[in-house]
Image (cartoon, rainbow, N blue to C red; front, top):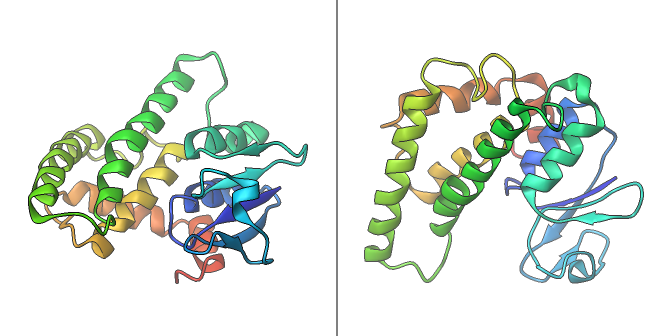
Amino acid sequence: MDLYYKAGACSLAPHIVAVEAGLPLNTISVDLGTKKDATGGDYLAVNPKGYVPALRTDAGVVLTEVGAILQYLGDINPKAGLMPPAGTAARVKQQEWLFFISTEIHKGMGAFFNPMMTPDWRKGVEATLGRRLAWLEKTLGDGPYLSGETFTAADAYLFVVLNWAKVAGYDLDKFPKLVAFRKRVSERPKVQEALKAEGLI
């Protein structure tokens, strides 16, 4: 499988899940400015949306949204426990987490990187994101992971978007449980492996 990625972007989540699941993966970096990949190829020919990630499966199918890619990778090796079995209540809860992270946390954090952001716009984003993170802080509590004791695909995704806070100049320290979560995930050996592969540590 080929994973098209930009170091530290949301494509890091499927990278982590693939490593955690023990899946062979060929990673190809993308320059999002020029839309060229590391081989010199036209990334828009792979993913006309123009952003990462994109995953080309062994069957040649291209998937382009984080939530879909995470579920696909998690299902390849069910024993890794990264995605509960389809049709179960646990699976639906995991999907709920993926959708929440995508629409409420990813989009909120991602807005800080928009060069058109104004101070007033930022205040609005910070207020909304703060409410979402406060709920998440309370819901996570002292549990190690979102679904309890088991690390899942949703944890990988949340870890990645929380990592953007420092670069975005957003103060995450007011949410100590989320800071502890981020540190806990970062210390997982397979997460370290993915971070090193992308040159992030």
